[in-house]
Image (cartoon, rainbow, N blue to C red; front, top):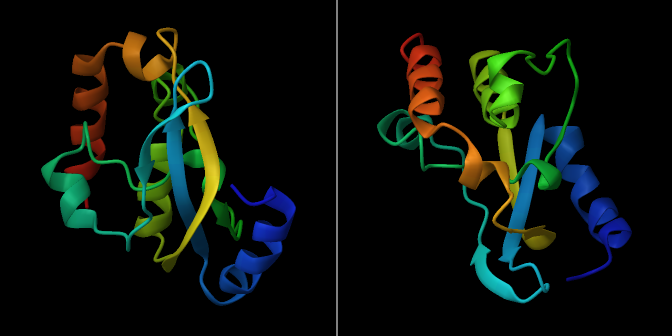
Length: 135
């Protein structure tokens, strides 16, 4: 992976034109070995609606955005670790334009303690379906 500072300055011009920019990321094991690389793609709300539990557009650490009064949600969303997902939907609903960089920006380390593996996915799905019904 390139140094984050250099990559940030390469991506910054996109944030000036586009309200939300994300980058590609890799999933690593507890020892830092890369297990999977996820390439950033254009935002597709239909994919989010069709598969809200599994479809993730943005690795939260790879996202930069202009703050125009959008705030992170508190409560069940953040307790279940899906506040970043909800922020993406809120930004979409407010009309933010999304862009992406193919550059690898983040290494996401997975372990057996990650919230993605320990949370109640039935509750996650219920919350996500509730929000996307109104889009």
